[in-house]
Length: 117
Image (cartoon, rainbow, N blue to C red):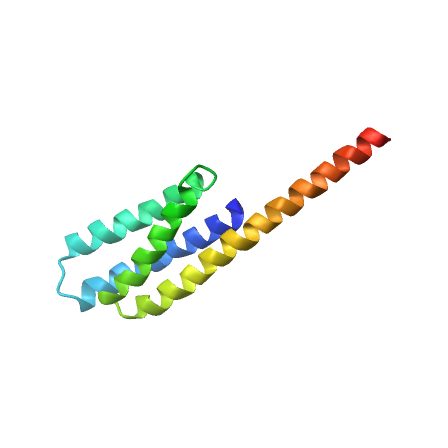
């Protein structure tokens, strides 16, 4: 799960940065405000890569996805990109857990086969 979710978060890092550039040009917000919010979200996306296996890491990732969708009020294209990345986040968590479970089953089967031999 960690690898899939981290890949999604790194993709979001770049999307948030580019959205910050667009927001600076198209909104009435100051550059400092845009980069305070965008920079915080970018740092959070990178820090979450290391927090995925800890309690609350996935839930913080969901909060970041909600924030991405809500950023569409400043940069309208982010409504679409936020939903896309929300779907990617769901898929990363859902299928990542299935992959982790399958790896654990294979490891247990290999261990029991080694014990039987």
